[in-house]
Image (cartoon, rainbow, N blue to C red; front, side):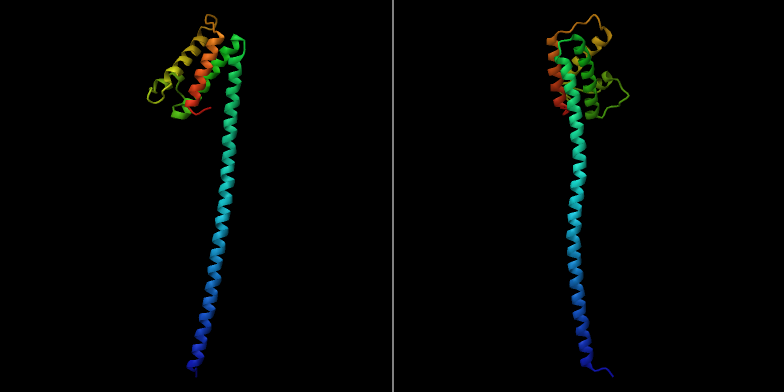
Length: 167
């Protein structure tokens, strides 16, 4: 009924069809793999740019806050120096708490007691600023600051904040 020649032609036709279909699917796989790679790259860039903007905004906000404190230190008014010192203490506390993941429910002094000089080499400087802040907060009228004290404290705070990577 079927001749062997007819079966051979049928098999060759199926082979040609299968090879063509395989090439079609192979090109499809390659094409869609390349498109997927491009889409992933665009999505990654969009994702990273989103977070890069937030980080830059955060850095800008930190710098604006520090510059406002700095202006208080540089003003000729002793009351501004007092306010600057109080704000500096809070600013440093925030940076230290973030860097060392300290319990936010602890007082700043308790947080500092948990650290050692090997954890943070400028710990003594931080303590000096904190002690001066406490004296100003508790002995307000009896403590008189000079502009020299103000500038010295500002420079010390900037060194601390740079070491903490807050500036």
